[in-house]
Image 1 (spheres, rainbow, N blue to C red):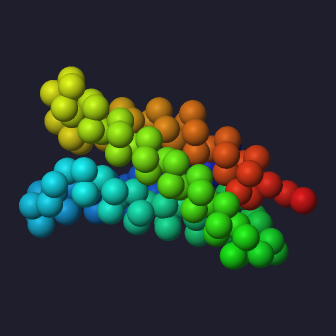
Image 2: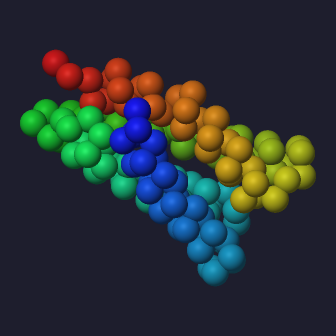
Length: 122
């Protein structure tokens, strides 16, 4: 669990850097920045999960990649919907919305599916 949290922190940092860079630097819509950040953070998290957290490089990368993509897609949709709702309905800044939603989705969705589905030991 500790390694998963460390990998999550690194992946989240990548996610937030890309999101904020897109929104503040490139002036993209915050929801597009959220999706692009999730993609960058997801790629980082897959690599770290495969090699560092779950130590599962002996399993086929394509099969893991497909399973990871399915989980990541669900995560990205939950993150995008959550950020949109928190930003539009509660009028929170998109960064605060992203922090709250990322924590909820990361702990309640991503970790367990990666442990029991994506990188499950045979």
